Image (tube, rainbow, N blue to C red; front, top):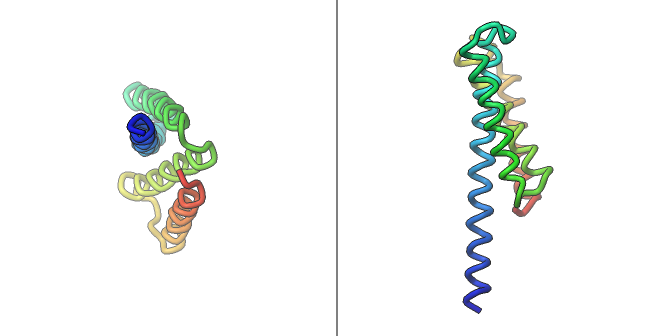
Length: 122
């Protein structure tokens, strides 16, 4: 019985760690997307290096997260974090529009992510 409880506990810890990895993968997606914008078409070395590095880290963390999380849930959450993060970065760093309709779209993305998580039961 102790082994069963221990393995259930270990599985729970693994799932939690994979959710953390997925969140970090989403953050690094925002990093590489923002760096691509700053790289001016990969013509500036510093932002280009950040973009490629951020991409590789993001994909690596996504791959780790997918070890125990459902594909559809993991990919949707990853892209959602990237989309919301890029939306916020665009407003904060590049003076992009902060219109009500764009905020409504962001709210709908977050709502979809929440429903995906609830529906995945992982």
